[in-house]
Image 1 (cartoon, rainbow, N blue to C red):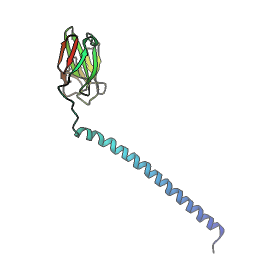
Image 2: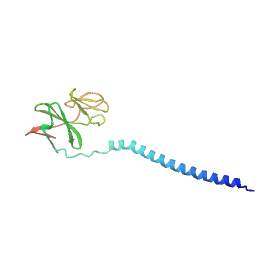
Image 3: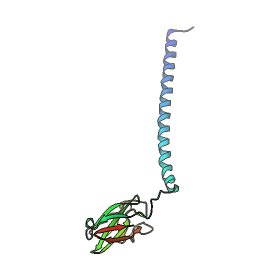
Length: 156
């Protein structure tokens, strides 16, 4: 014999099971999305390391007015798609360097008081000529040719 109460209990049980399945489905969808994002975050650096980088025309030159680069000051600009910097060390002596740290690719900052570059990521230090002074960078900053001609700096 079936009582009215057991039929109600069966209905409540079925409703609870349905809600439980819906919760599980939502939870698995959320966890799957998070897992996918973590997977992408972990594989993207490996892909960028292994993928060849696009290189612009290496004969391309950049022109900067010498008035923008004051004595002892640094002027940052883009060169071949990368951050670069030019410094005036003396009235006719200019140095152009990549502003990308050779350790992990952070952009270096010019420390005017110390007359050196400092990498904000891991404390790498470079001289005004780009030589490693300290920290983890394995090699000096890349240097570019600079020519002063009629008030223009020709870099590249």
